[in-house]
Length: 79
Ligand SMILES: [Zn+2]
Image 1: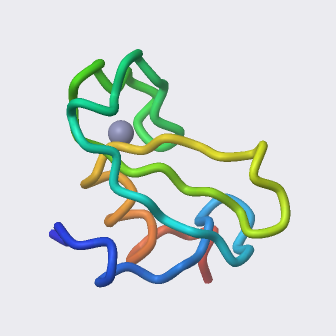
Image 2: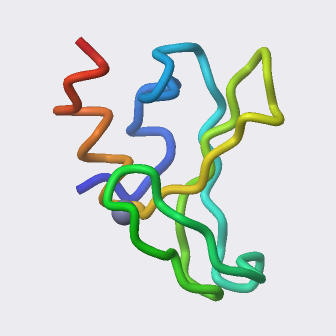
Image 3: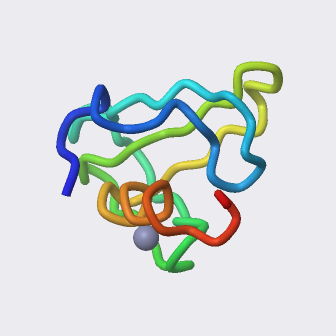
């Protein structure tokens, strides 16, 4: 399981577009988000990733760390 952003492809697994992936630290996570892979909540104060498409930053999505790592490696959308 990737713990470092640098280990991950810089791709939005939903669109396949180039994206910036940022680690959101617990102190930065101020509210709940819905993870697009497992459709469960990412708790406030839980470290997670945010995927920011290079050309459309407003389409950013928040992911559980392991969900994004899995999706980038095995997701069917990414093939
Ligand atoms: Zn998830």
